[in-house]
Image (cartoon, rainbow, N blue to C red; front, side):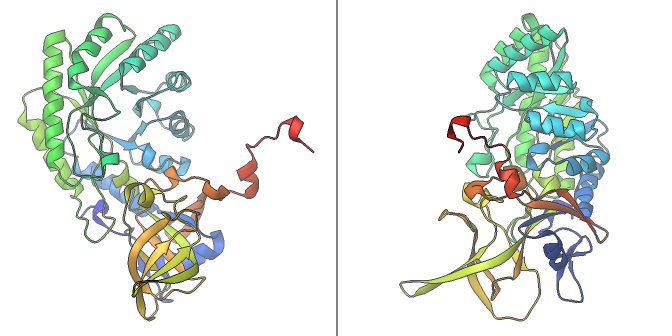
Amino acid sequence: MSVNQSLKPITTGVNNKGNITIGGCDLVDLAQKYGTPLYIIDEATLRGICKDYKNAFKDYKNIKMMYASKALCTSAITRIIDEEGFGFDTVSAGEIYTVYKSGVDMSKVLFNGNNKSRREIELALDLKVGRFSVDNFYEAELLNTIANEKGINVNILLRLTPGIECHTHEYIQTGQIDSKFGFDLTQVDKITELIKNKYTNLNLKGVHAHIGSQIFELQSFCDEIEILIREISRINQKFNLKLDEMNIGGGLGVKYTLKDNPPDVKELAKVVTEAMHKYSVDIPTIYLEPGRSIISTAGVTLYTVGSSKTVDLNGKIKKYVAVDGGMADNPRPSMYQAEYIAETVVKNEKEEEKITLAGRYCESGDILINEITLPKLDAGDLICVYNTGAYNYSMASNYNRVEKNAMVLVNNSQSDIIVNRESLDDLISHDNIPNRLRK
C-alpha cells in the first residue's frame, strides 16, 4: 500500500496516556507548546510518499518527478522534497522565489499558469527557471518579447486541454475542453507555426497537460497519454520538429474518508509505463507532477473545542460543536464540499454522539465536517482532523481578521516550527493610514 492510500500519517499511534501521537510527538504536548489551531506535518510520511513514487517508476529511466507546489509551498517543505530528488511545478512568483531561496536547482523548475504577469516572467527568467508551460497566445507573445529584450532563448512546453473530463469535482477538472487552461487541440497548429516562424526566442520542447485532481480512475491517464502522443507525432511530422518531452501532470487521489479508494502509486506507474510502451513514438522524457498525493496525508490540523448548541428540527435533534478554526484555515469543505475524518486527541470511554463540527467564522457555511460520530465533547477538548496537508495552508486567509495558524514539522519525537503563527501586529503590518486621516 502506498502512502496516499492511508487515512492518517504513517507514524500515527496512541501512547500510554491514551493520547494520539504523530512522528513520536504527543498531540496534547504540541497543542500546549504551540497553541491551536495548528498545522502538523509528519516528515516520515512526506518522505515516504516521495520514495513510493520514485520506487514505482524506477524501471522507467526517463521519468522526471516534479512536485506541484500549489498544494503546499513553504521553505522547509521545499527543502525536504528537493532532498528527495523532485523538481517543482510552480504557478507564481511567490512559489518560484520560495524554491529559489530554498536552494533548489532552478533548471528543475517549471513555471505554469494561465495568466503570468510581466513581473513574474522576468523573475523566472532572471532566476533561470528550466521550463515555461505556455498556456495561451497572449503569454507566448509576451514571453517571446521579454526573452528577446533579455537576449535569451526560453525552453517551453505547450499547455494543452486534451478534452478529458475526470470524475471529480467540476472546480478541480482541468483537462476538459471548457476550461480556462491551455490551448485546445484546434489551436495547436496556429501556435506551433507562430513559435517556429515568429517567436524565435521560444524553444518548443514538448507538450503539457493536466486532467484534474483527486483522480481515482487511471484510465484517464491512458486517454491523456494517447492524445498527447498523437499530437506530438503530428506536430513533429507537420512542422519538421523533434519534440521530446511530455508532461502528463498529476492529480492522483488520496484517502480523505473511509469510502475513498485511491489507486496505489504502483498502479499509476504500471498504467503510465504500459501506455507509453504501447506506442512506437520515441518520447524520451516524461514529467509527472503530483501535488496533493505528495503532501496531503502527511498533514493534520489540531483544533480546540469551544462552544456548542443543540437545535430541534421538527423532532430531529442536531448538535453543533465549534472549534477555534474553520474555513479560513481549511476552505475546502466550503468550496468543494470536501469531506474529512477527525478524532478526539485524548482517547476516552465517553458516550458517543453524532455532531456537526463547525468553524468559528461568521459564515453559516463554515462547517468542517457535517455529521460525524465522536465521544461527547467538552470545551477545551482537542480534535485532530486528518489529511489536511494539501490546499489548507496554501488556501488559508485572514477572514474575520484572524491570524493564520502556525505549522510544525514532526519527526523522531522532535517538533520544529516551520511557519510561525501570525500575530496581531502581523495582521496590520501592511496597513497604512494616510496622513490626512491620522489623529
